[in-house]
Image 1 (tube, rainbow, N blue to C red):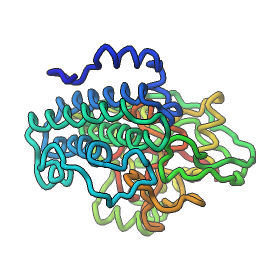
Image 2: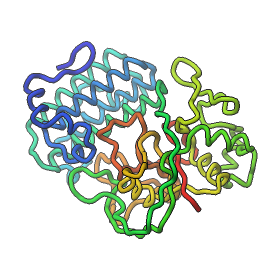
Image 3: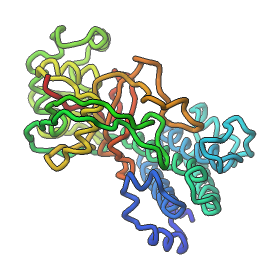
Image 4: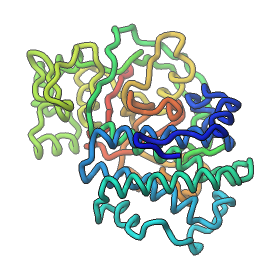
Length: 392
């Protein structure tokens, strides 16, 4: 039931959660195959997290973003008469009436909900979703939209955290790069459970031997690039990157007030000094590529990054501090087909966007999946994004 500070589970749901195993809430593999009991607990947890973030920011943008959580849950679960069919549903089928006629405008950003009205809407949509979940079949089709709703809300929370910029990734001591032998690798995700469209489907690729950084590039390393004229040297930038740089006149990643003489970053509450060993954050793809050219290195490919994330953790490979730009443009994997109804990961036109791998410190642990991909324009820097490099 809803409370003044969020949502709390009834005794029955608490007992169900205990049977499901609370630790599974942190398991990205388990969440993609989560059954009713675990999903119920996760949806409550996600809504509480959303409300906690909303309590820190009630700007129009934050209110509209939060409204999208309830709207998506209502459109694809409460109002969707074919939800039990999962991906086989007809997305054009007539839907039931919604709770609040203003919800579509809230989600589209055409209107801003009042905070109290929004909290009431979020409480009602979750209550209905949980009741429908309790009566759903225990199979992938029937649970598909509940799992997508959880993924959607966790991503909205991540976006709210990016807007707040209240915290930063952890500092990490430098470690030697890691050598990866040539091998064949199953890139992408196999069938089973709920798999985002841009991870479909697993296919074997050849991965040549490579040397990859153990952790992402830090501020100390990036300051050396800037001090060596990195933002003024045309030879370090692609044509598109140089055009972007000249148009905006930027000389540091987004939200950075000072690079030389100590990195000063804008965070909630004012300027903060960023430690030299803290990962670079809010660097876009153009800046990542320019740094790599300056360092005589390159961005890793998707197969190299994914292989390292799965096989090199025991040798010091660390990921999940920031989203990481990789080489290549956004594209579908072989056999992906058209995006299913309600998909959150449609493939953009060829060459239009870059690829980010991994997760950030603001990503919920249950969504930190080593197969996950994100797409964004190369100039995008609002995300908690950085990069690592490979030897040429």
